[in-house]
Image 1 (cartoon, rainbow, N blue to C red):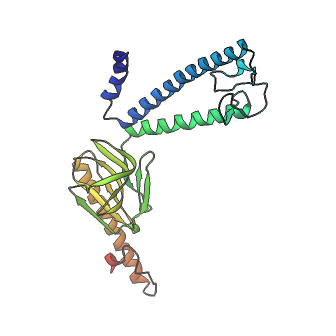
Image 2 (image 1 turned 30 degrees about the vertical axis):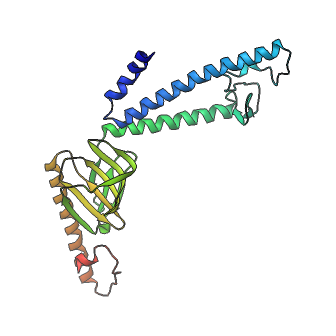
Image 3 (image 1 turned 180 degrees about the vertical axis):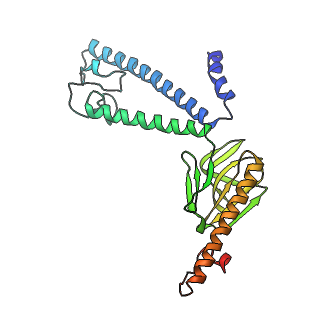
Length: 260
């Protein structure tokens, strides 16, 4: 038994660097456990019913054939969506009805979709682009992020990532992607390859964005391009304001201090 369990755990050990595969592996184990537990429950339920019949005790229901595993009810002839559980309290879903099938199908679809997106995120690296509309978009499944260049308060290169805790996302020994919080910076949107400086740090109002490529040279090129785009935007804003001196801009504008 122990040898068999060890054999099943070996793949999990080998996949320790891939968090998504660990989650998938865990779900497979959980489903397997539920199936085995349902089989045991069904066996116990049948034994109890047999004892009741042998002793001519009162039996609440004789619909044995509709209780697939003792806890799952499947009866196409019964139009009720929810039925009283055979043992214990609460209600059970009748998977034999159209409504029951739709609910089960939706649950399975959602689980499959989430797993697909998570697995997809393992193979697709974040990508930062600057659009012609002066928007910065970070494309990444589950944690995409967009903002205008006008929202940038500061952009610079850093060589060290601040210590942070993960709020929502994934963090492995190789990369960190998602939402984090650092004591010195606060909220952070992080899309980085760890131990691979430099990193582009973008300060927005209330949040920081930290990004890098797997190639430091590409990170530097991206930073200089981003810096050029920001400076170009500032230059255009200066020209626009000089042509319209009567225009009033709030002092809270993130780029106001850089323009004047």
